[in-house]
Image (cartoon, rainbow, N blue to C red; front, side, top):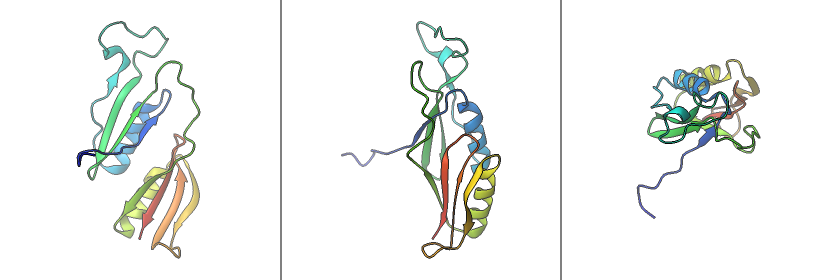
Amino acid sequence: MSDQTSLNPYLTFYGQCEEAFNFYAKCLGVKVGDMHRFKDMPGEQPSEPGLANQIMHTSLTFNGQTLMGSDGMPGMPNEGHKGFTLSLNVTSQDDAERLFKAFSEGGQVTMPLAATFFAKSFGTLTDKFGVSWMVHLE
């Protein structure tokens, strides 16, 4: 396998992708990449109501890691964000507290940020878009 191969999370938001990525970019202090809308596709335009302005693909990059997302394709089942958690591994307590607070805004804290037997600081939350996050300071 090539040294250039990478693995990136790709989130589907079913109509909230633009809002979610703008929120994540604000939390992380980065800019969202290009937002490609379904209406921008060459050829036949989508016929589903409201789909034209939804996000076909976008991404943001934070410290060399890329998070990608979309509003999903027509007919794709909306099963929410189950079965995974995104982990923010930080290098300072200030970063842990800042990011935990930012990502939990409008969401639900599932484990408050605190010292544990395996980390100086660790906490979990579900953001306002239903995505599960861990903040971890070794």
